Each structure stands twice: as C-alpha cells, then as structure tokens.
Length: 94
Image (cartoon, rainbow, N blue to C red; front, top):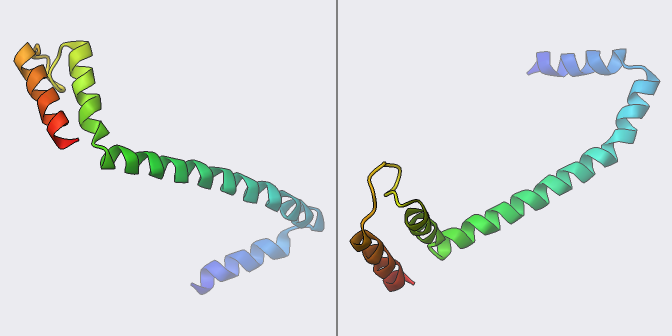
C-alpha cells in the first residue's frame, strides 16, 4: 500500500505545473463523460429490468424462430406445432 502511495507522490512530484493545470482543466470533461456513461448504464439497466419483468426474451426468441424457421441455436427446422405451442405458453404467462 505504501508503494502505491509512493508512486503517486513520485508522479505528482515530477509533474510540471502545466501538466497539473492540464489535469485540473480536464476534470470537468471527465466528470461530464462519467455522467454520460452513467446515463447510458442507467438506461441499459431499465431496459434489462423491463425485458426480464415482461418476459420479452421469450417473445424475442419466438419471433426469431418464426422469422428464421430454425429452432433455437440448432439448424433444426421449426414446425407449426412448435410455434403454436410457443405462442400459447407466452400468452398464458402474460
């Protein structure tokens, strides 16, 4: 732990005043970027919560199965019975 502190002190001691001033000037930019990232992270968490809460993942999988004609990650062709079964399961859960 002391070695980390010593490294920081050494780095701070070798920085010129211009370097320090530059770091201070860049702080608001860094803070603004962090706020921007936090907004995106918050939105992503809300989307994930909604997808989980509304069971949208099952709907998306069913939709992909209908569009591609393939079942899951396999190359097995989907039959109409599987599609009807998937729709009825999802409608019961909603």
